[in-house]
Amino acid sequence: MADNLSKQINQNFNQLSENDKFILNYILQNKEICQYMNVSELAQRSTSSPASIVRLSKKLGYSGFSELKYQLKSEIDEESQINFDTSTYLDELQNDINITVKLFKQTDLSEQFALIHKSNNVYAYATGTAQKNMLNELNRYMLSINKNLIIIPSYSELEMVSSLSSDVDLLIIVSLSGDTNDLEHPLRMLKMKNIPILSITDIKNNKLANYSPNNLYYHPTGIAKKGNISKLSFVTLNVLIDLFFQEYVSYVSKKES
Image (tube, rainbow, N blue to C red; front, side, top):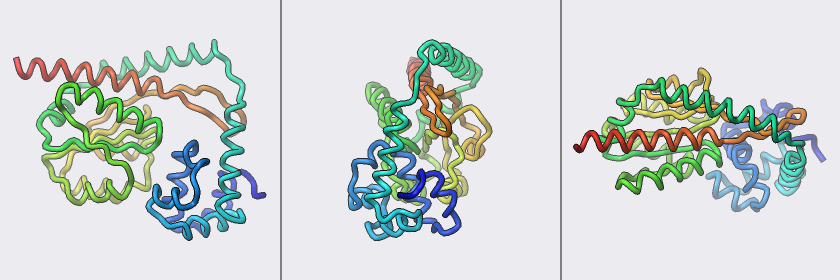
């Protein structure tokens, strides 16, 4: 069997097409669910074809998708066995929450709230499973005050939204790194059409944040690390989403009083 997936990607990167990279991005962002998919299910989720996935698997040195999936599952199982230091984690989590809350308090949210309040459509897109879960939670909050987020489920729908939306709409994008090269095309189109973007990313300079002055930041906490395998907690993203919603409710109340 071939070496670990990341190593195989690095060694064979020059052979990969843009479509290959898009499929890999989906797999890496959704490892937990991909380990249980068959090739047809993955093709549907990643808007590709079973043949493309099999060809990609072979480019990476695997006999086919089944072997790639076995490697993926093995790596996930190894991650689950990483040692966990509760005391250290709690200290780091407290520190990361404090950083996230401090940054939130320092941010002038009036423009972001005004954009949400006046937009015809508020679209929302996330680049990973944890971020998608947080967007669904934000949508649940917003529905309680009769404001609906239109969750964009995949890249192909994001492309479509970037083509059909107008400057009276808003797009919220939640990402970990914010260095989303695969989003360059829709982001450029949105910027060209003057469609506002609200980015929610890790605390660092990143490409996504550079597309808009409307940015929110959180600091994910490392749960554990072993070699090049690491796991992150998104408790701080949850905290940020909750703070953002509570402040928005306050904004709407003042607006309507």
